[in-house]
Image (cartoon, rainbow, N blue to C red; front, side, top):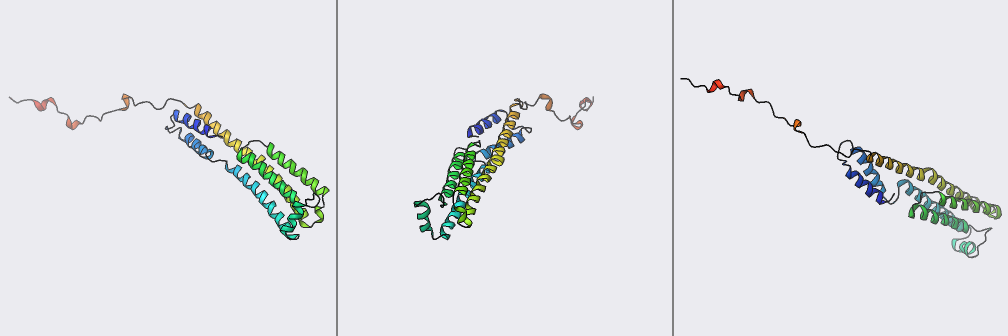
Amino acid sequence: MDSQCSGSASSRLTGKGLGSAGATPVSVRVESYEAGEKKCISDVRRTFCLFVTFDLLFVTLLWIIELNVNGGIQKQLEIEVLHYDYHASFFDIFLLAVFRFAVLILAYAVCKLRHWWAIAITTAASCAFLIAKVILSKLLSQGAFGYLLPIISFVLAWIETWLLDFKVLPQEAEDENRFQSIMDATDRAPLIGPGPLSDGQFYSPPESLAGRTSSSDFQFTP
């Protein structure tokens, strides 16, 4: 929710006189929600973006280790990148991680989408590519990394899908519904605040008996 919602919420709450005791809990909850909305992204969405970054860094680390184990980074880069071979290179698995990172960060951190179509595209593309890679290539004959990199990439893609579909989107929808219910309750609140004190609310202390003077006290003796 953009800052316009926060601004409109504040103006609506101010106009309804939230200084009264009954409205104080509502104002506190709205202020808490607005404080969260002032952040660029929600906490749960930030956690998702961090995991997407972890996906890229982890796959990159595994690929660098694979390059170093199989004869040196510089030599293997020439073989796997410059002389790319779909059946033997791990470079495309690294590019697949870059693709997931770029699409998901652009969609859910920059554009702040609230739909699952972007994660559906990245997960479907990752699964299709990895399954085809395992079936058609010769990765399984290249040692442990032939198993490790495709499996890790496959699992990370599905964890990202689970995080977004079961954590990020439901939590943000719940927060938005809660905020809307608070605003609806504020709309139904009475507009008339406590009025001025009536005359009956003012009183004077009873006249002191000691201060009274009877008429006999002022009688003159002849």
